Image 1 (cartoon, one colour):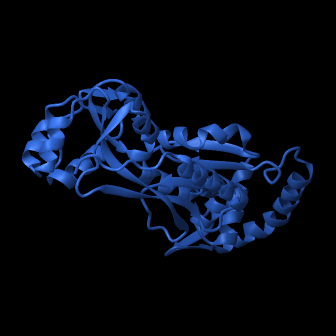
Image 2 (cartoon, one colour):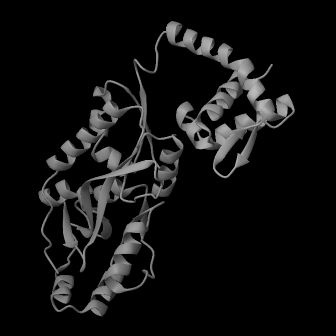
Image 3 (cartoon, rainbow, N blue to C red):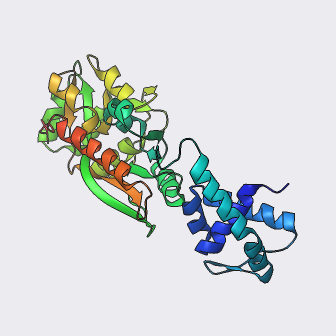
Length: 309
């Protein structure tokens, strides 16, 4: 027997005219839509759409099939709405993408109080932008803007990528070097120290080093830990250096557990954006998540002024 979801996907393509539109309507990925369509075409034995540019134009056989199944699918969808015990409308599920550290600092404390279901996804920013565009994610928090016309980016905060050290790190010699603006000596001093990094993300260190010294760093961290919050905990009360976003360590800097060593010159500042589709199905839920983020960012200790440079 043919898979009923193939017919639902076929109808969505027929109504929207594009694979992307069908994916958004069904809340599945575009590759999933393509798979359903190719499976149905293989099953019935003929092509159902002609692909002309970005439009999916139904063939004559496609039109016939639509006329045959349209009423039946409509009745099934009506029955589903009337008889399912818990509808998506009653308890929606929001899929949100962000980096792991951002989740721990911001949304984690509020998860249990949210009046809807939430799926948190972690990944690289380009991947999350792609998943948002395909309808897999409903909201992302990102320092990178995509180019898709279906995505809206809203700036809500910023982060400065800074050099921090454990409170047992003696950085006085470095401060004197920075005051003299001796970049060569500053780089040599930094390379002589013990460094912390993460397993999957060296982007902050690479960009910070490139901006301040004009080239990529020619060393690797001494200690590789799971994530940026692990770095903060490892540095607290100890020695070593790391380059991380300032909002992840403001409390620890204010309490004296770690030191703000250098903000760089010039500073490396990222704007943080909410990203969501223009036609989101969950405007109220998205608005609530946004409000929680703004609340947390405002409540964090004020940014520390640079003590050097």
